[in-house]
Length: 219
Ligand SMILES: [Zn+2]
Ligand SMILES: [Zn+2]
Image 1 (tube, rainbow, N blue to C red):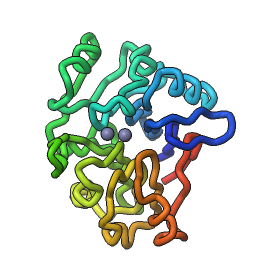
Image 2: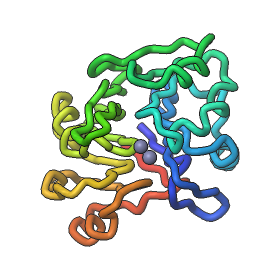
Image 3: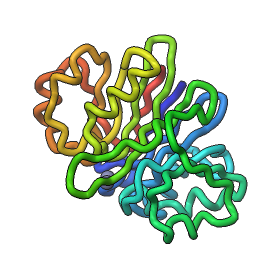
Image 4: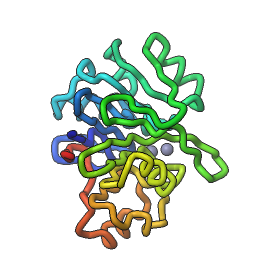
């Protein structure tokens, strides 16, 4: 399985950066996870990386925040696209998806071979926000991809363990501070909104992969 970071707060030369997150998983099918904050950046980076909207089979949206849904129109150029959302998403967003095959994920669901949507995980803060993560089953364990991780990374790790040992974790970690939950994970790539990026990089120096648009990882 190949993972490509398409949009992030950081970017390789030639790619654009913005406050947002999108990444592509390529296996039997191509699955896009989130769409960044704008069509402009997603379209620019996707073109540079040789990714066409028509080639994407499935889109999973982690949560209904602008920095993850802003590039949606780029993905929706593909009229065959299947979109995996949560029931809690706004009616505005759902309306935008009318005419597409939309699946409301209610619990851990295999959406493509060895690729799972976690289903809604609730945040413990006052916002009571629901978010889903993407979980990949590989020969060496589970790879977690998160959007913002509002519910808390430790909750997402717990969910992922239902599929096996967690091998890697990539994406936005948000305000996550229970860093000991990362012990034993072989590859850690804090992206996007990770508040404690510096601390994580220091504590897990030999495991951290610097995240930026253009980074590819193979599992
Ligand atoms: Zn968010
Ligand atoms: Zn975000």
